[in-house]
Length: 293
Image (cartoon, rainbow, N blue to C red; front, side):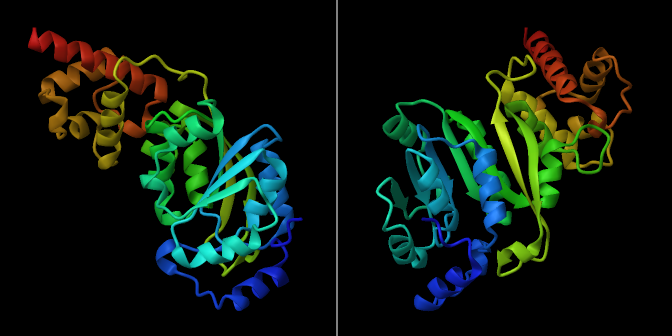
């Protein structure tokens, strides 16, 4: 039975192993059973599912996942937590703990071995400093994923689901929305963690699209354009893209491509929708081919 959502039991485990929180790993352990239950419900994990958990900590959410899923692989980077996890998860025979850095794990291979290559579910309470690299790594490597249900900084969760013209809108918003449908499930105050973080958190579910919502010929080029557009937010889109040598276009060509999109050359990147970025990417593709030909 899952017991670690109770703060008293968490404290007992930490004292037993004289565990010291590692700031470099961004460790904040969840101590609220209601939030844990909401995460499991939102993830949609069922008895046929294989789940990849990133950053299990002392195994608080892992216990819940083991009770809901067919099999769980939990990837933990901190060596000091491995003996604790061995203890807190000893009652479950459907879990494997990997003492590795998630950014170095071959998740495609894991999905193949553990789930026959079928889409897996990812659940995580992510360290805030590494949220974006982990999420983008999962999407860009085209790992077969059904959904990602994660606890992140509230500000980051907001950024993932906003649209054009808002201050939080940026490259992360567009990347996440290209690959998945984002939906904030529950906001989580600092008091639900040990130790308490300085900022609020949120659980967000990213449900993978069967196919991207826009047609783009060169995905890599589109994301280069998006990054260049937001690198210097105050600059116009034309200036931002002109300063980006990888595009291999001069300022006049960039301006022509933007006006071909049907928007003024003075527009800023933050005003464009995902669909417009896809269209612009296709226009720039044609322009580059024409200039080479």
